[in-house]
Image (tube, rainbow, N blue to C red; front, side, top):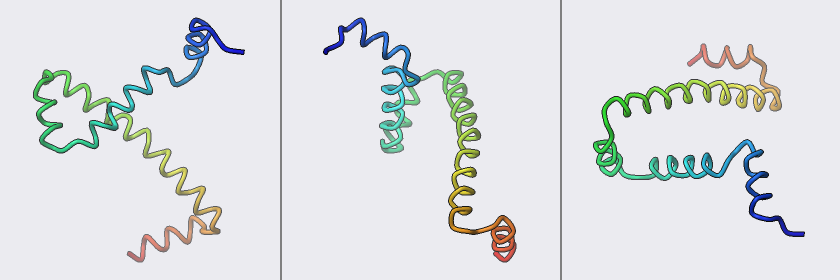
Length: 94
């Protein structure tokens, strides 16, 4: 049974990741794959207040994602049998 366009649109609206979010994420990923010169050239076309806001938003996301990375590493270490004390001792020895 096929869905009509309206039904598909309703399903997409209910999804956490809307097509617009996915496309914007892909655009940012592609921008990250560009050379420094191309990124700088594109940034020169944007106003300074907008650039500052973008930088702020990226910094917020970076801070949020640090927690994700830390949690993931802790889970992997626990699976491998590495205790927090072992890890702290390793870090202290470096």
